[in-house]
Length: 364
Image 1 (cartoon, one colour):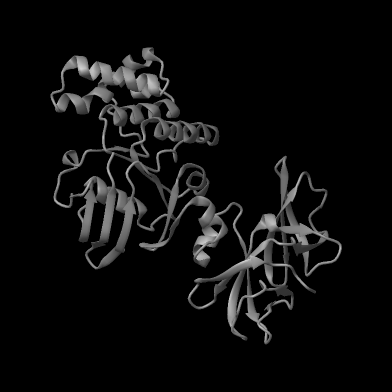
Image 2: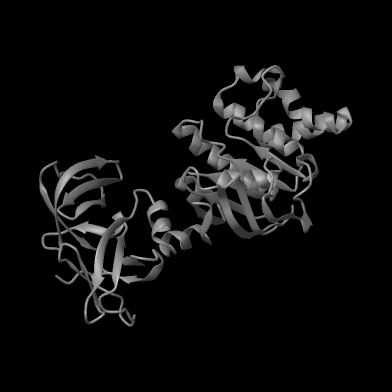
């Protein structure tokens, strides 16, 4: 296990800047998730750590050693790729053994490490003589993980490893990867664009956007207290509802574009007339007989345990998560309100930075 540190790390391809001075510390033994949309720089950051991309500026350290100029094989890392990166002409055994053979490890030690990996990953030993084409997607990903395990590295790197799997297999493999980290305790960086993976796997999240880090923190903190409007909209499924508003003259209410009025947290000071974006999560809305939001139902997704209500009015669309099955039909009118004591999220319309979060109970 080894700690990792990025200090003012930049990456540019000619005049095209991809990463803009990343500062990030990863604790020894930590499972850190780097999440963000396609093109935000997360995979580039991982590949620079692995030595597969050159660093334009700044330093990267592994276990206190600067690795900027080191070859990938000198960094004591193991990487699991999205496309498995298995050698098609080799058996599973030889795929797992290849990196150890290059290091001239004795055959007995190679076999012992592979046997251990097979046990950890609960692989069928008979699978070792098959070729990758004879395996399912989930089996191939387990083999790729086994190849990483046998190296006994200081750091595991995962680059969107579940993207090619179906929904059921992704759930199973998330559990496998979580269990693997709990068992081995190796420092792990895991890159994904899937915020469900991010929320369920990591001890901390790094949310990236446009080559910058927007927020770092435990999943619950990032979800409950998003630092920016981008984080609020990216983390959470379905996404947070946003509405434009203005702080009223008293500083105690926000007036939305449609005229709705929401109470602001008691004791907080806001500048009158300040333009804000108001965020409300779908699970914090409820259908009521009399409330501030009158909308027309567009679509209802019955998911079993709950339902997603998609509705709209002149100001835009809203999504509400309702418990159980909903009998609402497209075209019907529905009135929504913010649950008592549920948080509302305020973001400065210009800077997009968070202002405050607190109880958001509408008052007519």
